[in-house]
Length: 546
Image (cartoon, rainbow, N blue to C red; front, side):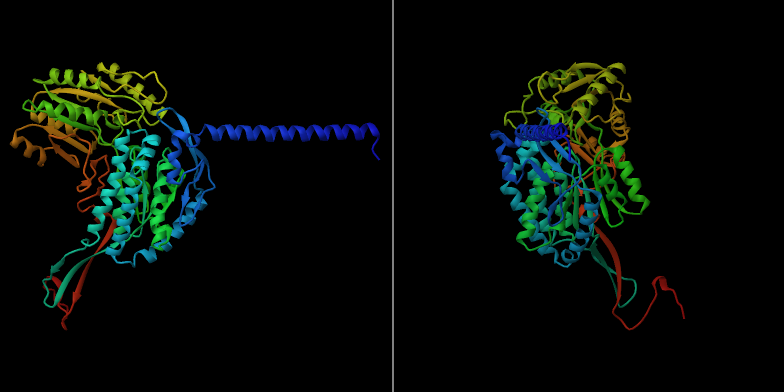
């Protein structure tokens, strides 16, 4: 038996441990409660988030059922850096399970006639229409772009769904004449299978929509990994799409999702079961993705950076040039891949245009991105603010003059001043660097040949535009010695592409094409089929083998 003193001491220590444990539990619950109450989703002002099926903690894996047991990440609002809600990312084991389910779902989806697949895509478009304002608000809250741009981005997904519905009755190859009697050549197009889609933060809805709608009508299934900093948008979009699939008694794995970081992205790039990998992001990461996919002789569709230029000639209509340059350089706070980063002005109008654009910059309404009156919101992350400051400093060191902007704004969130810099040579290192921030480098040129050459001398080849009334110059610009970009405009900005055309660029932009025109061909494989319907066996090229 224990002595009385020892028993007393044991009881005292026991009570102390229990009290300490209760205190810790109480403290944990208090902290958890405080954390939950500090999330924007729990504030009345943001209760609309729950209309999208979002909550404090959200599963980041969907493959017919919802799950996720990986790292828990918090999504932050760029306008105030406050936490919105949390998402649990996928583990590599969950990625593996999702790929298996997607491949199994493809067996059913590929057998459904293309027009019937188009009907499902039509329903996805209608479901998005019903949620367009609330989903656009989420894009604005989580990405940071202004409300009208957020809604416009969802509209792009809706539009490409409409486009894909019609396309589902049109895709196919020609019947070609054969040189052999009693023979015919047919070009047959089939789905590739599983399309992996990795999207960037700046268009967290639209880029997935471009890929998803077209891939689906072609007979593919999709596996989406959205940007780690916009996971709530990925979850909300997937919930909308999943509901449509469920209503049609189709496997949810047709449109799978795995939220994750570089580990999931690398797995997708290495995975031979991913028949096409569509990657949208930086040129640096895109190059690594391309090399990894190429090692397995896989298919890739790359939408990477752009160092886009507007060129205004001496005959340009300045009433078009000024608003175009302002919209294309300031819109989305300079975070579009098609943002105008270089403005080339003929020497005869340089000073006038700079003065007018600087005046317009000062009138741009800056504020909360979800305020309908706001034209300019925050950068997406604090790291982007650091990149902005570094670029401004480099521009000054390389001889640039700041006409306006150049500073971080004194307000909550990741706000910086839209900036105009003049005086730099056309080949200054900073001018040739794509910095994903609202900095516009203004260059002065003398001749057409000079301007065209400057447009083409950067590594990227995404978007470009000239402003002129000279029709000869227009067609030289469109021709073989003109712009080397995938998007070549006249008298409109570099940004704001329509869904009906093929979107993409050349050189370090990656060469991929998405959305309209014949971009559907990237999501299919082509077979040339020769059919002999005669009783003879003639060989091609007149060869006799007897």
